Image: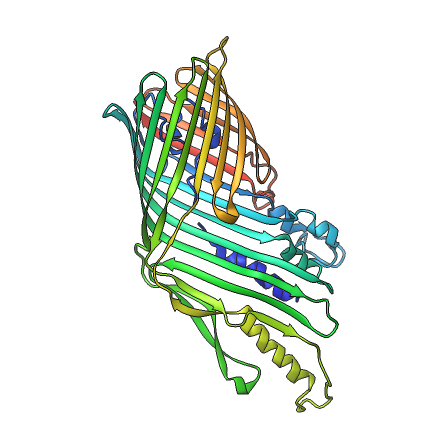
Length: 468
């Protein structure tokens, strides 16, 4: 049972791969001449025109989650006492269940990550407003694991486990975006952006309605449906042929590898950003935007499923001493091994045809107050909500922003979101001719010796642009 639970967790984490959100620096939403505010709200323009340095204009890497490396990998209590390994996993039998499971949420344990690279971007004043053109590559992933899965893996006992659903998804695509913002009167500014999306790959893994009933003395039952869907040009599952332990059942095929024959466009889609800014008076400004409202249509959907949705173990009955007897221990163990093979392994179901997937829209709502006695200082409150099924999250961020010089601005902020509390900062240097910015929505915090953050919450954003 422990091996089965561990297999399911490993499969979810492995198949997750890499995947999508429009992610730029929330800490810079109220930073006056941050060149990429239009990615957070397309109504924003800039005082300067700019063009990005190739692949360096806006590089953003971030992760969010309510569990992380420090919850899975722990100090080995047996280090120096018969073991030379300093670190171990929470599954180590010498770590108590209460300590091993203390870092996991009682609900769903979620983690998501993003890598957003601006290949080329430009912003310029024309057509009565401010215009942007962007070419970028985006990848992100999301994973949701219920608490009961970790409990089942760590502390399997004679009880019922209603594990629920395990989900993981990943997407990679390129985008070409055109934006325009326009001032209407003295108080209102509106903006919109259209994005053409060129899909590279989409992968989804879902284990539905997982249950383990170990309460009965004479029967254990594990049920659940596993489905993997991958949309990618030239992608195929590779299967190997295995023999059942029972020779009368012949052979079965199981997915044990994948192959990618060539590369190309896997899908095409569109998305829109819409936003507005309203200046109530000299001191107060409010704004709102929805970004990444769209979809990608994929040309194929390679699917794999488990052949059996249940595994039943009802004990060893009338076990014979002789190994060639029908009810020998070896024969009965072989029967259960065949059941596990059907339940735990995926088999290729072929191409299910085209499919359309969304990638989550984000709603940003902001309010900014300019300090009357020192107008170079403002305070801002930003609410961000990403709508993406099991990977939906909400954040509130309070910031203090200052522009002491015409070519220098930045700020610090604190935030509380669905995963954790955090602190961020941004520094934006923009003299005539050059622009450099760097910032974090979440400070890195403690890391392992391999420089892996112990928390799953971390971010860094940096960019180099030519400005005039």
